Amino acid sequence: MSSLSSRAQQRILEIIPGALVWTTLITCVVLSFIRPLWVIYGVIIFDLYWLFRVSYFLPFLLISAMRYHRDIKKNWQAMAEAKEGYGRLHHLVFLPTYKEEIGVLRETLARIASSAYPSDRIIVVLAGEERDKERFERSASILMDEFGKTFLALLTTVHPKNLPNEIPGKGSNLNWSGHQVLPKIEAMGFSPDDVIVSSFDVDTIIHPQYFSCLTHAYLTSHNPTRTSYQPVPLYNNNLWESPAAVRVAMFGTTFWLLTELSRPEHMMTFSSHSMSLRMLVDVDFWQKDVVSEDSRIFIQGLLRYHGDYHVTPMYVPVSMDTVMTGKYWPALIALYNQLRRWAWGVENFPFMVKAFREDTQMPRWTKIVFIWKQIEGMYTWATAPLLIFLMGRLPFWVAPEQFREFALFQNTPFTLQWIMRFAMVGVFVSAGLALTLLPARPAHIPKYQTIVVVILQWLLLPVTFVLFGAVPAIDAQTRMMLGLPLGFNVSPKRASGGK
Image (cartoon, rainbow, N blue to C red):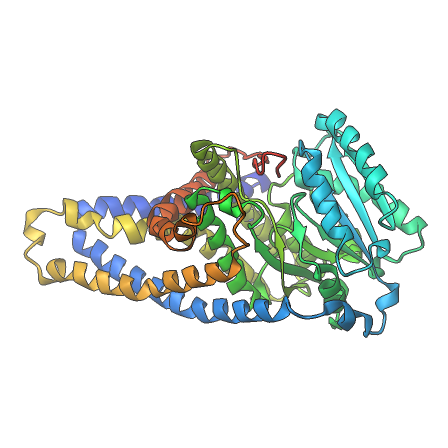
């Protein structure tokens, strides 16, 4: 590959994920007509692999769930205050915002202000966009009057539009805001080693002990500037008002990250999380030309320190909004767009391969594991739902008559049914766990809807798995394969504002 131009190498790497997915799907369809027994063998192997996967991940999910329910009851503030070095630390919170109404911003600031951690040790940055300058400055002025004296500092930045070498979105906003705020932090006399940065979606509602738990984790880490701190993301703010498919998809995201938290050796950050200002300064803040800035900033740290960078789990939650438009079908469209944007994390694959090849100091095993997790995760995201629910049945619908006499052909449907019955244990566990994560039912929600939210919504899992799992992942990977960039779409949330 070294003889190819840099651009040609980049295009090959961009094509690989989508090519793997489409090769798998097309091969399954074609062979279902001409070699159905091959497809049946393949489906049996894949379903067994999926059963193994479910069996492997379930214990990690349950371990994380137990740690979650244990840690949300702890007095992290008292534990943090007892640690040496507590007094030297301060928190810096970035809240990038675009077109959010003041109600969302106010609630987020109020929750930060009322947390167990002293608000006079917290610096909050409202990071607006010039594309929405009038609204932002109006809201910022009101919030400055309300919260200006609550925090150590409440700062504002406005990200100019149409800057070169960047795309509009959260990453470019954070990059601009970080560079604007750093001189002010230095003027206050704070060392980047003693400032913990939290990058939040603007609708993030923190647990009251979030900053206290984060401080404790920072003070007890063997190398606190070489790690990111990942909380449990819950999409609970407007969960009861969301369509069932949205709830199932959001619970799935939470459960996926819970399994990652209990085996964090090679995980990356997702959504709202925290890190040291030292790392951000060392990597020159967030990249300006990516959509998936939440995972990319971790990779930047991994590269800057040649593999000596990791994730520290925090089993306390941050709660955010589900997509919400006020109408059912627009909400599903918004969900699809949001999941496609998350699936655009596939853009990390070519970046990682190229950067890892150039980094001669990073251990080879570290490179292999991260690249494998990236490509395997994106591949199964796009193919597993279709292979399990559709492709496995296709040979039985279209196979030529001469194959239908084979014992394998006749017995396989029963075999697959039993495999999937065992795998359904994961669904029952997830449904039970979801019940423990539900927020209190709002007064305006009828009691009968509890049955829908707790039980009946899980009947939509196969449909949700395909339409809001495989399809947006295939969409994202196909776009990258064809060289069609995906911009940063803003997901509509509560009627009062969004992400």
